[in-house]
Amino acid sequence: MRLVSACLATIVLTAGAVWAQAAAQNGQSAVLRGLDKVNGQTQDLEIPVGGSAEIFGVIVSLMECRYPADNPTGDAYAYVTVRNPNDATVYFDGWMIASSPALNALDHSRYDIWVMRCNSV
Image (cartoon, rainbow, N blue to C red):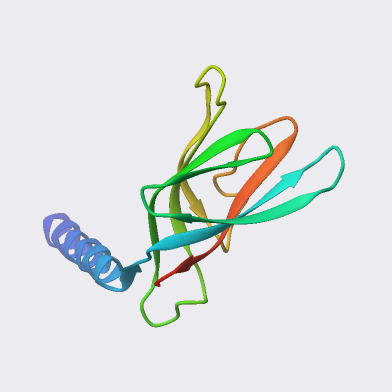
């Protein structure tokens, strides 16, 4: 009985993962927002996939941006790298999720950067 339960659980989890992959679209760019925590200044920037931009003295690179196919404005998932331009120290390297910015956040003493949305054009 345990073997049957384990097999069913594997099938359900695998089917869910395949569905989740099929339900996402790749964006051409992402809009990110930066916050300087010292002076309260915010700045939005659009970065194309595979591109980089400077915001508040750090370099932000966008590797990939995905959004739900059935709700393009509902959420965004962006693979982002944030680094120091002077010594290439990496402050962040991973996925950021627009609907849950604190789930996997940039850990910097002065700046916050989070993904707002993906753009398809």
